[in-house]
Structure formats: structure tokens, C-alpha cells
Length: 114
Length: 116
Image 1 (cartoon, chains in turn brown, yellow):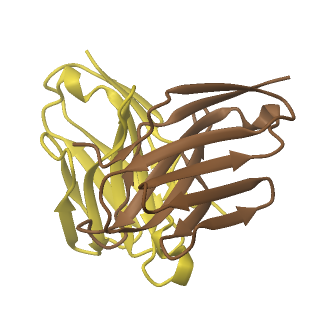
Image 2 (cartoon, chains in turn blue, brown; image 1 turned 90 degrees about the horizontal axis):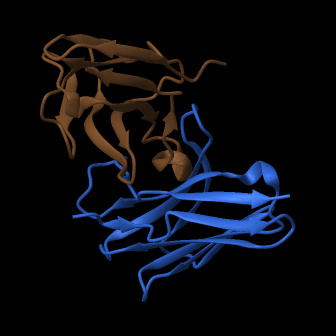
């Protein structure tokens, strides 16, 4: 049973606009959340993370929001650029997972149109 | 500045053949992981290791074995390959001692395996 879910397999956004990628989780004991970005034929690369004690973390054009009561997090990319086109994975750690272990969502393919 | 290196990058096997995937990291990380990625399934953990000489099962361990004889290397073995093991395999590493970065895993570029 998947504990981290990304319900949108794909998202298309115009260049310069905001991209919002969503992620839901079921385990309230998760205490750390991460977003990874993956280009074709490459491994996932870490993008941004947030601890469960925070509700927002910002890094340049990327902001992650965490809503613990809704068990929901989102990644905002503003402004979106064609180079942001990639698959984005949400991941979580903590709870009953082993130390350092992450559980991943199924990913969302973001396409930024020029 | 290699990070995590996986070999080979591509491989085609026939059903029943065996092979070993090699993962090497030069970041002195204690933890290492093997994942498989299938369409619509995200990354699923096969096996992991929290230190030299120790391994543990992940979410989908059946049909695979692993070994961590040296801290920098993590091997994934398929003893008798099956078509269901056709996938892209990723290795990752992390360190529990890196403060806020302790949960960040660093990935290799992947091995694309086809089993016919």
C-alpha cells in the first residue's frame, strides 16, 4: 500500500507561470519530506526538503509547503522555465521506516512549454 | 567528483541468466540502497545497507541478493533473471551524520536492464 501518493501523472505549464506539484501521504509519523527531480537517462537529484516542524521552506524559485493536518505537501516553482521539465518525485522518511530510508511517490511529469 | 557510480549502464539478459550490478560511492556514506523504477510505480526499495557487512530487505526483495563487503561498494545480484525484473535500477547513498542533510540520498545514473 503506497504511503506517498502523487495523483497527477503529468502537468503542463506555460513558461513564466507557476507550477504546482502535489503530494499526499498517509502516515502521520513521517517527519521529513523531500522533492527530487529526474531528467531522462539520469538519476534523481535532490531539490528541496522540509521538516515536519515547519510549514514552508523556500530555495530560490522553489518553495515547498506542508499541511500536516491534511497530510499534504506541494512544490511551487515560480517562474517556471523550460529546463524545469522533468519528473518530480515526492519522498518521505520517519515513522516505521528504517533510519535514512525514504518512501517515494510515483512521480509527476512536468512539462514547461516555451 | 564522481559521487555514485553504477556499472553497467545497460544490459540485456536471457531468462535464467545471472548478473551483478555494481554501485560505488566516493562520499564515505554509511548507508546505501538499491531501487527499481517501473512506469507508474515510482522508486521501490529492493535492499539496503546501513554499514559494511550489513544488509536488509526493502519493499521488493524477492529474486535479488546484495552484498556490502566494502563501505564504498554495494552489489546487487540477480541469480536467475526473469522478465518481471526488466526495469531501471538505481543505487543511492546517504549519511546519517550529516545533520539536516542526513535524509538526503544521492543517486547514480541508473542501469537499464532488459530480461528476454
